[in-house]
Length: 376
Image (cartoon, rainbow, N blue to C red; front, side, top):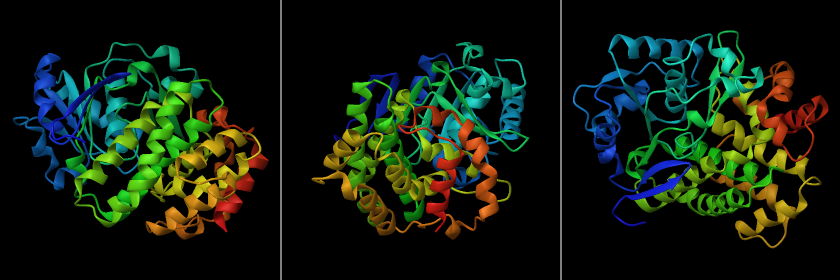
């Protein structure tokens, strides 16, 4: 990856490379944004990354929790209006980016928020009447910087997907230097999130060969570079490769996800648990591959080839071994979950928008079987 940031146009404008963050102020000016609201979290602000934006005294909302909520969206909207903002910069991991999308939606659309969830029939209610949004990821995992969805926890405890082409950020600024200080375990968890995106979108039955090619390339980059990024976090090349893999996972969201995410979404919304989405995905990945084995054998062969395997028989085990190598927990029990917790999320997993694009049908029996396997 060269020293000069590159401009890519695919779904949205992407500025990629070391030093790309220096372009944020320029792009805001080009978009006519004079007073942006910076949406972030306390950790990112405490790490001094806000200063890297080069913005003089911006309005800041840093109240985004580990899993963004309807309340955090409402607080961000209030901050946006109070400061008279005319655009948004999202700085952080998936939570600030998704929260910023929710804020962008609700400063221009009437409430309540829930009506815009995809499973509530909200897709056609979301219009392009939204303020400019520049997404600046500080982790390499979610792909939210180019994704058309936001995952938000509602006040009733449900976690729903809000999805529309209009929710894709106006500009994604991807600077791998911003990820250099990411701790090893967070590097590992976000990296497995990127891998799960590449795997699930590739396996989705929707026809999109272009997205499938991107997913395979992203998987190859991530599988090779994630252990290096975890062990040698100061090295910019593996950090750059992981940021590209995460970006590619986000670019393939057009194909839809699957059972990994159907299960991770409601578990991430459990009250009092604060479970990391990427860690959940890492645990579910091998079990869902085994569940889907008969539904997409050809896809699994190509996934195996992408990570250097001759046959797909050991594909699930290879991802299990990678998870163990980078130090992530192996079971849901390791995360402090109970059998009762697992049973409670099955209805929401079936209803989740990702279930529709899983290769094998998703029902209560399937969810229970995968949850049980992941708990052992």
